[in-house]
Image: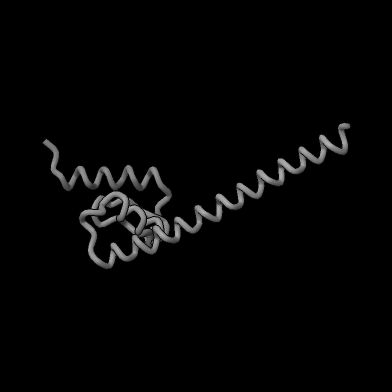
Length: 99
C-alpha cells in the first residue's frame, strides 16, 4: 500500500511536468496545483475549494470573479462589434459591388 505523502509527491511531480511551473508560482494550499498568477489562483480556490476558504481568500475570489466578469463582458462587446462590422461589409459589398 502506498504512503499518502509518496502519492502527493508523485502527483505534484506529474502536475509540475504537465505545466511549466516556476519556483515562485502560486500553489493551491488544498490540492497543490500551481498557478502562474494570483488571479488564476484566486479563481481556482473559489471554484474548486469554495467551502473551505478563509475570509481573505473569499474576498480575493470575489475580486477575481468580478474582474473575470468584466473581462468577459468586454470580450462579448468586441465580438459583437466584429460581427456587426463583418455584416456591414458583406451588405455593403452585396449592395454596391456585386449589383
